Length: 83
Length: 158
Image (cartoon, rainbow over all chains, first blue to last red; front, side, top):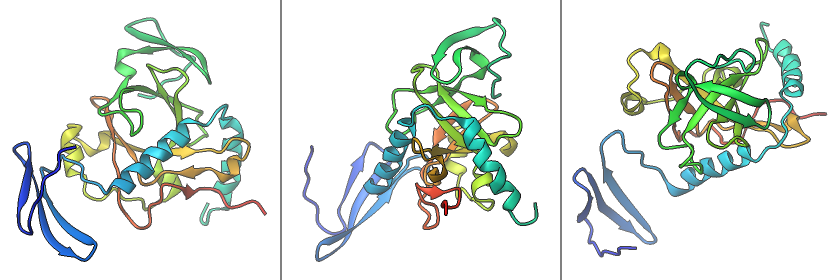
């Protein structure tokens, strides 16, 4: 891992078009500014991990019987208001 | 673009997949959806086909072409949450080269616990966006306080 030391207001460029800057430090919290093109996905690590873990969990399901599941679904549909 | 496993011709065959759920299925190049990057956690697996479960069923299979044992159960989020919104999608729209919004298909992945399908949940945080025109797809991540990665679909059994 590359480790750099920055002061408030200073930044780091990742490539030509992503800039990360330190905006504020308050106790144990640091506010970070990220300037990046709209096609770059910027996410908090835990959000990314949550989706990844859920993908793995969904893929881990074995022998799903969609016929059974569709049956569970039908009564739900009939119970919906307006149906 | 989703395919019926029973109606496949040998024309333009791209792959035969020995699937877990449907036996051998033959897919054509023009049925393959490419996710780039792949789904989170499955980055290197990019080619999938959508398989309809049945006319009366809202469920679909997203079957991986390159790993036969990998398949996800997916559903249009409108069935789960009628007012589900993706928010700002200009970036991904450009990325997937979506010209007409009608071509953009949105699906969410279901997690179905073995033995207790009643407990199944939909991952509303990580919808799949597919451009049906060029068959390019991507998993988006949405941060929205009301969209859980474990959104329960069916009421708890009493």
